[in-house]
Image (cartoon, rainbow, N blue to C red; front, side, top):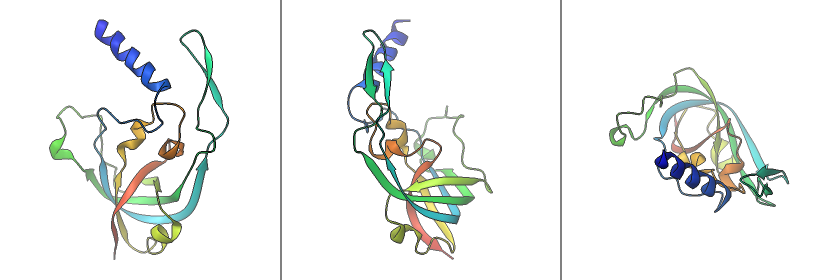
Length: 164
């Protein structure tokens, strides 16, 4: 019970203090996938002035986003050809909750960079991407940087340019 209370106290402290891109204690394994690109669109995510009431008492309003923060890149809608856990050899055996992406699935991905860098040739062939585990580090407020990308969009890096 004491261990659970200590973990809870650390989690609450981490959530409301620090920076939006705190280090992950144990980031999850990354998925590496070969995908074909269906669409490619330039985006910029920006902060809002939304605040939340945060306990424990005394309750106070805490901003969800850093004022004026923005994060730009490219949204890719892709179809998965193949995938694997990128760090499978180094991962513990109890990661049954992790899954590769299923072949044929459609995914919405975010890539940091300009549309000219990312989209100039991506519509014609296979692109290799790796998920960015940094999303799981968005556990502190106010959010900024990659934490502005909606949680329904997977952040990735491009490993290998197009092969035809």
